[in-house]
Amino acid sequence: MPAKRASRARARSEDVRHLQDPRAIRALAHPARMAIIDALASGDELTATECAALTGLSPSATAYHLKLLERYGFAEPAPARSDGRERPWRASDHRTKFDLDPATPAGAAATAAVTLAFFDSTRAVGEMFMATEHEEPEQWRDAAALANADVWLTADESRQVAAQLMAVVDPYRKRALRDRPAGSRRVRVTNVVVPHRGH
Image 1 (cartoon, rainbow, N blue to C red):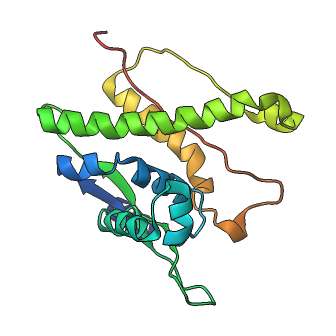
Image 2: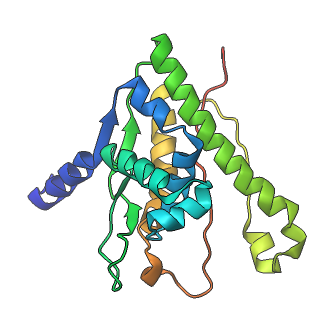
Image 3: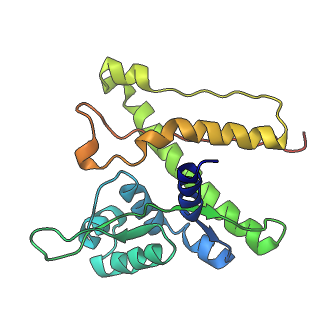
């Protein structure tokens, strides 16, 4: 591998943070923290007060959740705004991997809590769109897609499929407010690769 490519590969691997403490992972399933993670995932930079409007908590309580998310690599302080009153936050550039041993009861419970919280969040996005789909412009009705494919794969092939699906999305993940093309809107793309139980 050429030196430049090797350097980029190392940089990508260093962006992955491994969370191994089941208590830390379970803490991320807190509804307020999930709401903050979801809001920052849009690429917006938000203050604790702005996040408080999303969580229904006080700004001080929301600031506590933001600091915890910073500790685990989900959020980071953004550059100060011109008024300098309250610092904004943004999603961290780091990709966080849930690295738990599901063979232990604590690890399995923590993994399930976070995974189900993410599923619930995505389901809510889908339900809101479907409930008002008839009000959407035709181009957005046609842009929405829901598809399943049951295929027979080895474990290695399953990992390859998951990586390939995310590779399609990666070029769009870092768009900040200034990088968004005219006419764009936030779109939830969910990558679910999971084996059927007992097959």
